Image (tube, rainbow, N blue to C red; front, top):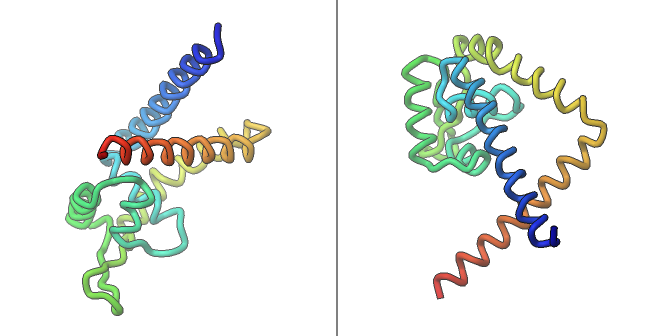
Length: 153
């Protein structure tokens, strides 16, 4: 098999693995009764020490503003999160878990964190894995942006 063919096969396998990873998280979100977006919002708030704003979540998880906004409204209606105005900017709101939201996070997010830690701890070269994956994503992003820029000309 030529180098180009081998690379094509590896890309196919890699993309299938990414889809499999996505389906694992979809399964975890579904088992918790949450949408994918709601799952990642609660996951982020529970696992990070700072409070986030809507625009932060859009950037972090590559969701549109509308998708995050819809999920936040639903989570607020379900009394899972509370949106608190930021004094320095009336438009921005911090996202905080309510007491019920903390309960949901303990029940569903904390076990997911344990699954993730246990799985990653099975890999001896985990730092290398993450660094290589990060490099690949950066290259894909750069080359995608170049392609899009060239097609606009």
